[in-house]
Image 1 (cartoon, helix red, strand yellow):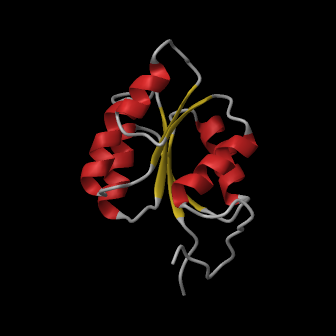
Image 2 (cartoon, rainbow, N blue to C red):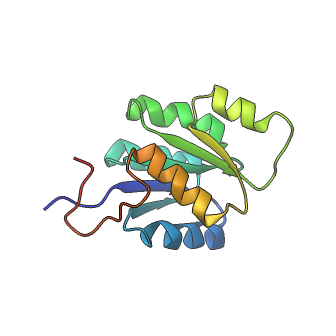
Length: 135
C-alpha cells in the first residue's frame, strides 16, 4: 500500500514544529521531524521525502546552509524556508540558494498549505487518504 507524501519539517522550536506538523497532517501528509539542520540531512540520507520545510535559523546550520546538503542527498527535492527573523534580502538569498519559496513566520496556514501543494505539484483541492501516493 502506498503512503501519503512525506514532508521533512526542520525547526528547533518544538512548539512551532508541532503546530506546523499538525497543520500538514491535517491535509493528510506524513511529517518527519528534525530539530536541527544536520538532523534533517541525516533523515534525508536514510529516508525518502517528497519535500522539505526548513527553519532559517537553527543551531549549527541554517536553512539556507542545509538546503544544498539535502539536494545532494535527493536531487531536485523541493525545499521551502521560513523565518521569524525577517531581514532585508533574506527572501532573495533563499530563492537564489534554490528554495521554492521563503515564508515569514508566523505562516498563514492557507499560504503554507498552498506552498506545500505547489512543491508536491498537486491540485489545491486534493486531500491525501491512506493509500494515496503522488503517482
